[in-house]
Amino acid sequence: MDHEPNYTPASFEKRAAAWMGIAYVLMLLFILNFVLFSGGKQLPGTFPLFLIPVSVALAAILVHRIRTKTLPNGMAVAVVGLIACTAALILGLALGLPALLAALGV
Image (cartoon, rainbow, N blue to C red; front, side, top):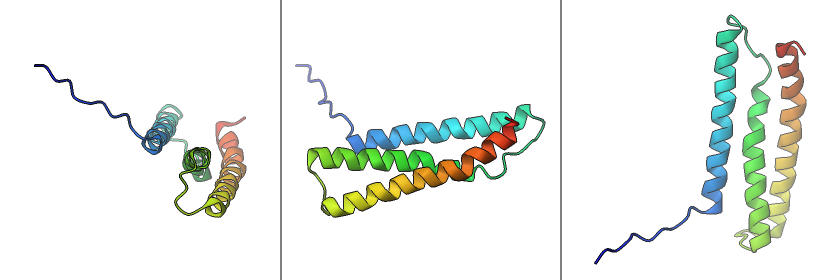
């Protein structure tokens, strides 16, 4: 008898972490290609942009847990977490985007 192994899909948290990892890889590839093809020019001040993928992934996980009612610490902690994610996203964009545009010469 042929028994196929049971397939268990990854949890939402693992999939969100995987997408966050893909975003980080794409960001690093952009940085490496920019340095290679611009003759060694750097991207100073763009480090806050690395806050964006983690804050989006954490916010997505918190929203998912709110919708499925699987919050281990209650709704108040989730709301504080969403506020922190929003603040990190705004801070990352406010500090990193102008530096990126200046480095790109736009």
